[in-house]
Image (cartoon, rainbow, N blue to C red; front, side, top):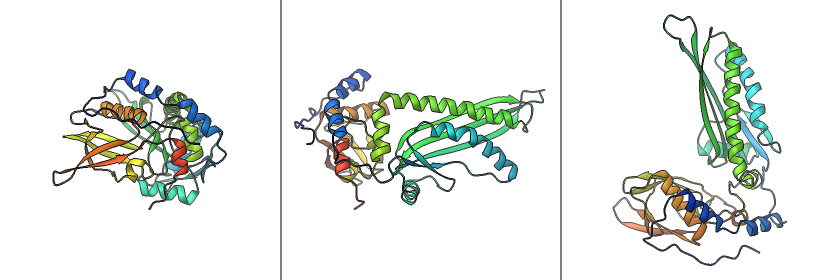
Amino acid sequence: MGRPRQRKRATPGMRILPSAFMVAALLACTDREAVSAAIANAPDLPDAPGAYRLVLVHGDTGDNAQQKEIRDRIEARVLPRLEALFPSVSYVSTADVSPGRENVAAACKQNKTIGLIGVSEDWNYTAGASGSTAQQLNVQLGVGVYECTFNPLLNAQKTKSVSVASSTDTDALVAAFEALTQRIVSQFQSRISLDPSLTENFLRFGYPIGDGERRTFLALEPAPGGAVVSFAAPYGTAARAGLREGVMVTALDGHPLAGLDLSALQAIQIGLSAIADSITATLLNPDGTSTTVDFEPEDLRWYVSHPYTGN
């Protein structure tokens, strides 16, 4: 039996304050224990196809044998540490996936996985301090964990600069990437520990949503006169109601969005998802007129029970 819900709507015109205290209070209103128990005791929620499988996309092999050898050394130290983040996962390794929603979706389908980890490495050398023969080594490591619509579950990019005797010092290069890997792994571990169920549900069901959460999978960014949709997962209730990237939103449940920064927009969305049974978005049309769209924040059980078909 699904979670009973009373129909609630925030009072129009009352601005939700984007404070950490209020966000925490609103999240506490969700019936986390009841939802978690319902999920754990529901044998009718099978693992999704591709559960606990991820495509691991690493950098290209370089332009020559030396570059390939160096990159192989780097990845021999970097990739195992990233893989250890999810010990229950099996990986399909490739270097052939380009960024973009369609490419990621195709890679998931082709390799029968629940998502993707993208790894990018880059480095260069610049002149050292004046009068010194040493060189400056600059390294950059980016790692993203994505579900199959290119929605990031975890994402980080780190840089590091060190002084080296010469560009042939590959040990220093590998050590620099190891240091960046440890920083990223520590960051990811901290974020995972905040709500382990979010990662587990993503790996098992394909939905990055924690036990007890209700989500629309809609992301907004500040824009003149309101906010613009920067991401709408195709399976999310917002996208199913017709919201797409680039659409201008001027209000959510009567709360004006003009002039709000990103953190304030996120706080309003989190708050409404916790207390409102249905959310009304006011959209600005190209001709200057407004229309409204209604959609409901839903929990994991709903998403698993209402799979997106692409139609």
